[in-house]
Image (cartoon, rainbow, N blue to C red; front, side, top):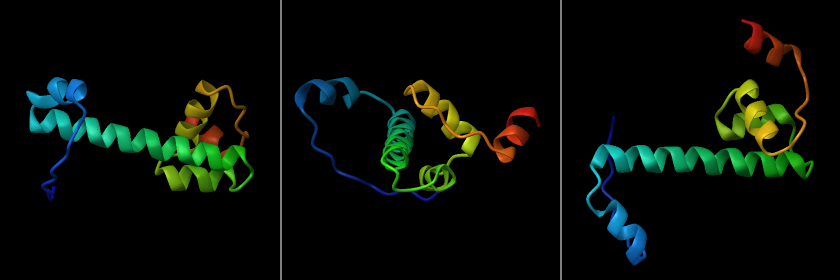
Length: 90
């Protein structure tokens, strides 16, 4: 995996918390955070009617089935499709 070096200024409290964290932990934290942000933005656009559910899944870089789970967690009722059924049943 290619690496990029970043310099980041954080407020004191989170700075202390992550100050002693390993590089692997910080990389995982950032990757998970970015994924969550992509999913939230995609679901927001979908909820406003700006994009289809399939397009939202593509924007978030997840399957429609996975995006459905995020949508349910937010109290949304995602559409049911043959693709989702295949992903769920196998």
